[in-house]
Image (cartoon, rainbow, N blue to C red; front, side, top):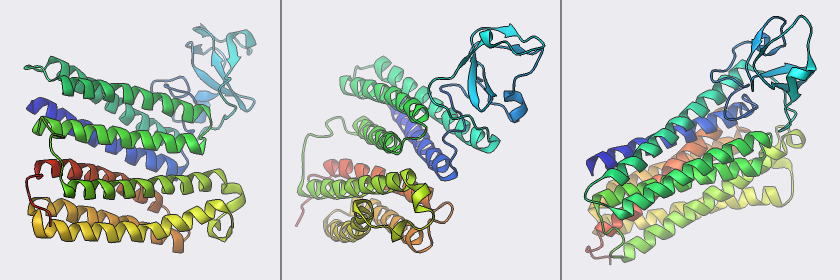
Length: 341
C-alpha cells in the first residue's frame, strides 16, 4: 500500500508541474509552438532552427515529417529522399489548421509542456498497474486508478483538440478544468490508501469545508471565463481590457468581488477549526495564505495591466489552493469524531 501512496504523490506532483508548464505556455503564447500532435513538426525531438523546416534538395525525409512551404504546412506521405526540385506528389497539405509559424522559444516551451504531460501519463499508468497488482485486492483503488487512466487519456485528447483549434479559449479552459478533476481524484485515491472507509462518516465541519471548496471552485471557473474572454478578444482589447463594457467585463467584477466572500467564509472556517479541530489548523492556515497570494496577484493584474508572470502565478496558486481544499475536506472525515460547536 505504501507503494501506491508514493506513486499517487508522485503523479500529483507531476500533474501540478504540467499545470505550471501549461500556465507558462499560455503566458508566453507558446501554445502553437508545436502545430501538430503528438509529435512536434513531425519530429520526436523538435527542430531548433527554421532552416530544418524548409524544403531542401537531396535530403532524406520520413513519413509524417512536417515542413513549412509557401506559408503553410506540408506533411511527407512516405519515406523518401528529395530530388533536385520539389515534387508535390511526395507531400500533402496539413489539413488540421493553417498556422505555419516557427519560433524556437515557443516550440521548446510547448515541447517541454508535452514531455511533462507524457510523464504524467506514464506515472498514471504505473499507478494503475500497481493498484491492480496490489494484494490484498483493493477494488476501490483499482477503479479509482482506472478512472485516472481514462481521465489522463481524455486530457491528452483535449490537448490535441486545443492545438487543432489553434488555441480555442473554451477548449483551453476545459483542458484546465480536467486537470483539476485529475487532482481531485488523486487526492481521494491518496486518502483512501490512508483510510479505507474514507466516506464512512460525515461531520458538520466536513459540510462547511465542502461549501468552502465549492465557493473556491466557482471562483476558479469564473476566472477561467474572464481569461477566456481576454484571450479571444486580445486584438480589440489591446492593453485596456477594463475599459470595455458588457457581460464579460461584468463577470470580471463579480469575480473580483466574490473573492471577498471566499476570504470571509474561510476566515470563519478557520475560527471554527481553531477552537475544535487543531489537527486541521495548519492546513487551513496554508489555505488562507494561498487565498491571500491569489487575491494579491489578481490585484496586481488589475492595477498594473497584467504584468508578465502574474497570470501563471494566479493560475498555479488557484490550482494548489483547490488541491489543499480537497485535502482538508477529506481529512475532516478522519476527524469526524471531534465536536463542532
